Amino acid sequence: MQQPAFAYVRHGQTPFFRLPTRDVGVDAEAYRGIQAVLLGVPYDGGCTHHPGARFAPYHVRRVSATTQSFHPSHRIDVFQALRCVDGGNAALPPFAPAMAREILQQEIGAITSARARPFVVGGDHSITLPVLRALAEAHGPLAVLHIDAHLDTSTGELWGDAFHHGTPFRHAIEEGLLARDALVQVGIRAPWGTPEEDALVKGYGGRILSPFELQDPRTLARELRGHFGGRPLYVSIDVDGIDPSFAPGTGTPVPCGLTPREVTSLLRGLAGCRLVGMDVVEVCPALDHADLTSLLAAHLIFEGLALAALAGE
Image (tube, rainbow, N blue to C red; front, side):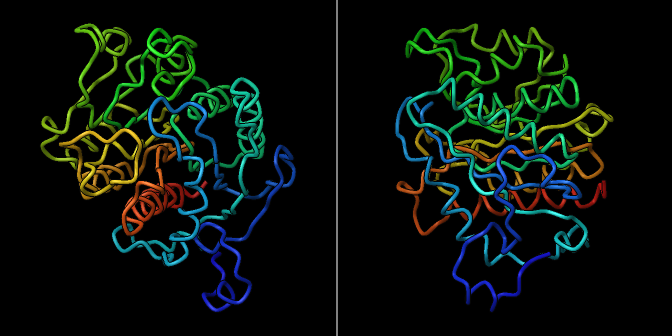
């Protein structure tokens, strides 16, 4: 349930969507009875270009406060139908990447142990790997909708580290965290280093769609509902999947991206899928203009929460 607007103004704190707070770390018992936990991950130690995504949770919280609770398309009051809280930020060491991944996996594990869904605001895209590890441990191999300009299946050769924001889906495939043929990547358009850069995803039965191939997001959503079936679904959104004219606040912008309307239509069309978690990553507030990217991130998370509210679990 949201706090009243005047109460929010009075105390001056900034939880996601004016929600109750429950900063408990890895204490699963404290999440009992909660259906969704919003978790900030202020970490950008996996960035290869422009850092700054560590500050995104603070800015997304701030702009999310103006979001009301009733979803006009799904016809549901999200925060009445869904018991959700702001779980604070995962406190990750900025200079110890392996330790950061372990801590985040434990925090997501606490959320899933309480039978709640994590909604994660990063941070760079390297944080998705420990989230997927925890969710796969709880639910088995996952179906994934990945919205991005990049495949994120790189190796460590270019930057000398196998775990950065361009590698999470390579590890997820190699570790068996994803169900075969259940990875769908939408918005992919950045130039590749080699002609074989799509081989790993296609060899695993995945599907790759550029913005030029996306004719109707509602039709794609209908296809995905049938394709994913009852498998546990994770949605991972890198904001550089959206065109930088709409989302300038990101460290690796690529022209000719998706529109917010296309991404929102795609998410709304997933109603009925078994959503077990979601992230929005790579928001870099220092590069943003008029909070456009932070606002978009907040509304995309709200769309995911609406899907969870519709499921009613």
